[in-house]
Structures are given as structure tokens and as C-alpha cells.
Length: 350
Image (spheres, rainbow, N blue to C red):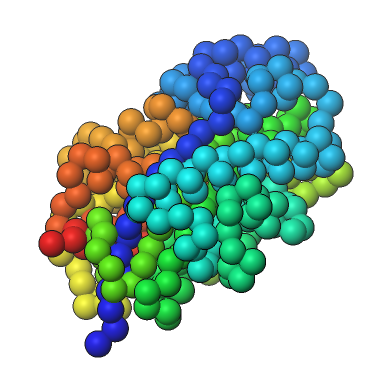
């Protein structure tokens, strides 16, 4: 019988520049109000987002200057490398292993491009072995933390006893665009921040929880819901459909289908833990799963304190759930471009 894959640790990290939401709103007003007639109406999203503070790899004023791919890529490599080391080191320390003991590194990111990928750039500073296996994954967006946990768990299961390090990094602030006078760009400016999370997984060892199952559901003809455009200035956000009503109408049956493939049902889950994309999405998810209003307390707290960091956000929520006392079975769920729902079920260690 295959040995269970155990989650040995979860750790998170944010960059040094903490910025209050009201200061970002004021900067956005200076940047957009005189050029975009709809800004005053759209600016309400800064107050209604449920976000109080976010973190960025550069000071606020940096984002108000002229930026193209070179500047954004330099910030991604520098800021992403620092966050990788911070999150990974904390996760390894919590698991009681060293970087030299890591056999496989899975790196998840969709907000910057560098070749070689981030784990190669920091390998020397981390102390990874020359034979460490690298698995960089791009394009999963907000679902990347949950899908990355699934990928890392399957790699750990394939080699019992090996140590798999998952590092999830998103620098969403690098996609802030002054030239995009669109509703989607204003919403993105009001929601997204930077952060990283890391996990250590091992098969056949003790840990916080066992990775019980994982699965995904991709809805057909939904490529327009979320994603990136690319042009000479950098990434541009795609939000062509309202996500909260889509989540409210479609998430519960999709998650039930994912669970059903593993012989589980929603009634078997003690705690549903979600990626909090925004305050309206949190409300939509509570409605979709018939939860009491306010039930997703950790999700709201993470959103308020950090904003939407894309892929790492779900792991920030998981860390908060673990701190509060992990229930017997937790289902961690996120939505991302595709449009895809990704789920991982965790059973608390005995």
C-alpha cells in the first residue's frame, strides 16, 4: 500500500514594502482620475475590496514611473529571489530539514519570466545539492498554490522518503499598468499584492497532515474569465467576466464532482478553505456552499492583511487554519485561469 504523503510544514513571506490601501487608492487617483472618466465610479473597489494593507517588492512611487519588461523583469528576479529564500528557509526550518536534503524543488509563479527559473538563481544561496531536481511551473495563476501542492504531493508519493520543497511566488504588483485605462486594470490595482509561500512534503514520514486527494475541474469556453495579455510594456490583466456570480453558480457542483471521484462528498469535509480573491468572491463562496455569513473568517483576515497575492494566497489561508487548529479533514480550494477549480484534501495527522 502506498505510503501517505505528509505535509511537514507551511511558511509564508512578504516583501519589505507594506502599503496601506488608502495610500494605494490615493496614488491610483493621481495616476488615473484625470485621464479615465470612469475612474471615480470604479474607485469604490478600493474601499469595498476588504483589503486594508498590501505588500510590494518596490516602494509605491516606483510603480508611478515609466516601466517596461526590463524594469519589471529585474524586479521579479531580485524581489522573487529574496522571497524564495525567505519562504523556503522558513519552511525547511519548520520541517527540521536542510536545503541540502531537498531532492525536488517545485516552483510556481505566473507573474514574471526568467530563464533559468528562480530556483536555479537562488540554488547557491539556498545550499541545494547539484543533483536537486527542478520543476518550474508557469501559468496557473490564482490556482497555483493549490495545484502546486497537488503536483508536489504526487512527486513525493512517487519517491517515498524523498524531500519535496514547494515554493509559490507571485509579484502581482509588477503587472500594475498606468497605460491601461480599463475596468480590469483598475480592479487589479485595487486587489493584488506580492507574497510567497513554501511547503515541505515527504512520503512515509510524520507531519501536520496527510495529502489525501487532489483534483481539478476546468470549465469549457472560459478562457476569457482570467489571465494575462502581453505587450511591449508587460503583462496586462484579463477579467472579462464577473467572477463572483460565476463562482456562486458553478463552484459547489464542480467541487462535489472532484470529491466524488475519490469517494468523498461535501458532508465529509470539516473545513472548506478557499483562496479569497476579493470580498465579493468570499461572499459568493459562502453562498455557493451554504455556509453561514462570516464562516470564512481566515479568508477575510488574509485578504485584509495582504490583499490577493494570487497563487500563494491559498497557502496563507492554510497556514492560518493550521495555526487555529487543523480539523480532521480540510479541503483547500482555489480558482484560476483556464477557468479552473483546483482542490486538495488534507487529513490531520493522528
